[in-house]
Length: 255
Image 1 (cartoon, helix red, strand yellow):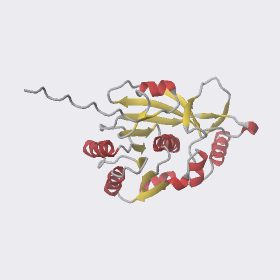
Image 2 (cartoon, rainbow, N blue to C red):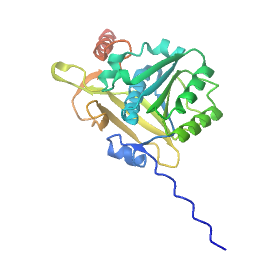
Image 3 (spheres, rainbow, N blue to C red):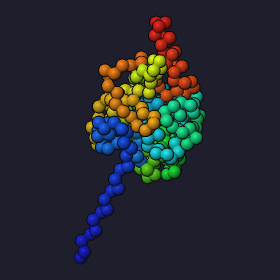
Image 4 (tube, one colour):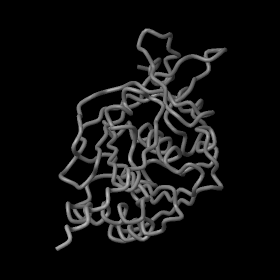
């Protein structure tokens, strides 16, 4: 009787190299395609920074393919209009993406699953504000399965929400960090303080301060001893980042 044929090796996991060697090493080579990643804003006020980090990672994962960004109506009302100029300032091509605002939570979740089934997409982002009881462990498993089958990654952006059990491969926490000053003390490249809160079958708990390199669509490490501009630069949604930084500076002086 012939011996059974060996099972074929599992295909290697596709990964995006973020440009940060230590972070990529912790992730086993980079952020994985075909799975679910959760990104939480550290505080509600860090929502724009978390969105900037999410958009940067999504552009890297897309590698030229279209991006589908789905927003809850509540998130759109809280964080403002998703502006093409802000997308471009991070190095993206706004005409390479589609932004949709969905009125109810179940509609948002259904749209996300439909998007994940389209292998022509580079990535899907779901942006929500506040706790969503409909987004339970079962729903996250449905996301993870759809992403695995199509190879399209899902980035689940959560603002003003607490982490809960899910089928995510990685879970992140993001807050805004001061940027490096440019000539004239203008705000520099967007910077983020990120922590890998959880990783399935891998190390977790590490933190990094990252600066986004828009020309190469990769992150680079920022060291704390470098001279800072004092400005915090999240992705601009409804106004240029420089205007937002000026508002923050005014608030500090008023205080």
